[in-house]
Length: 438
Image 1 (cartoon, one colour):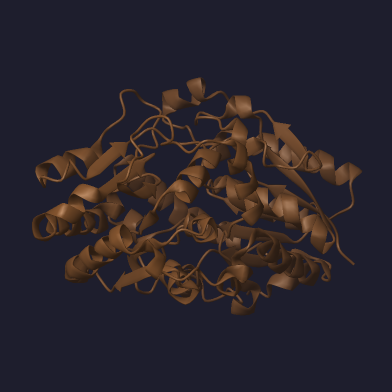
Image 2 (cartoon, helix red, strand yellow):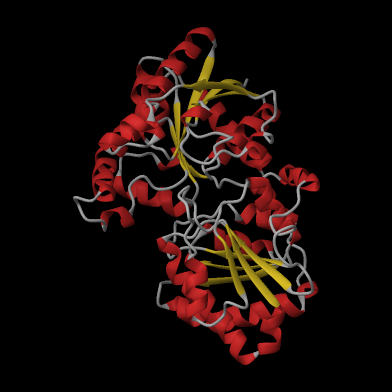
């Protein structure tokens, strides 16, 4: 049957945030599964993040977009509000209302973060009489947020999330997130959620994105020496919950430098795009730690954020890829999919219960190391050191990742799963009937 679906995604290319990829992938691949997607997003002039024209070029010209206005960040920040989900809330609602009057929609998907647009679910299901899918790319209510001081900005945001999340969920016909653990935590918070109306669907990756790297030099091609040193790259931001994993990784590098100095001299471990902020000058947080550990001759940091295509080209051109995760079991790294599709061997360190560790372990093509808690990470220094030596000296000893192992995580396959969800909920007459909520 299929039909037309509205995708509310406040961030969308050329916005450079990682959250744009869910809507980008669906907008491109849903038509192959019989669905016509129309994206409602904020106009790029409303974004405060760095824009990425190369990423926008990956969105097909056929994708229908409605770019809305938003309250100016320069004004709302006077009261401490910068979230585009809040600034654009009424604009998204108005755009969706106008679209519903002219186009026979069959469902609406709202993906976040930001999460505040999910509060439109009640209005969509009651007034527009359309089923709503809420897609959580990260937890809105998190255990980490609960640890923040109550009167801090993060603490207040957490308390607000605790109050608002159930209000949105009660009107959802279906709920998706990027991990089973995240779904289990939501189901434990709200026993009235029908678990049959939940699914864990990772962000995935699009192998076709790598076509753009053919005419794009990697970030290192013209800025650093790419001689005979074995270049291993980490691409992405470094944030507080990564600190334990990063510290252990650098200790393992220091161990290689101490026990295998000749091999360490052949290594170039480079961290790219570690500082996601737009402020100048950028913070060299990895380089500072490397200097304290005496491994500055091995570890280099280029903190400015790369464009998406630059990031792909950098991974594809390296000897190997480094993938580090936080100490949270629900954490899922969207960058693991481009890393697998780059064809380069990898070293990954993730929580053993995370979907990232499970996927990488099944796919092969690298060394996948897991840990149970923050203390157990320390036990990985020797295995990490051994993997680094192997990547430096024997990269051809790694088999290629099995494409069948990550076929289900390609953007096309992920769009197919969402298409099936849209089809199932569109069969009902109202979102409440589909949701089976008490």
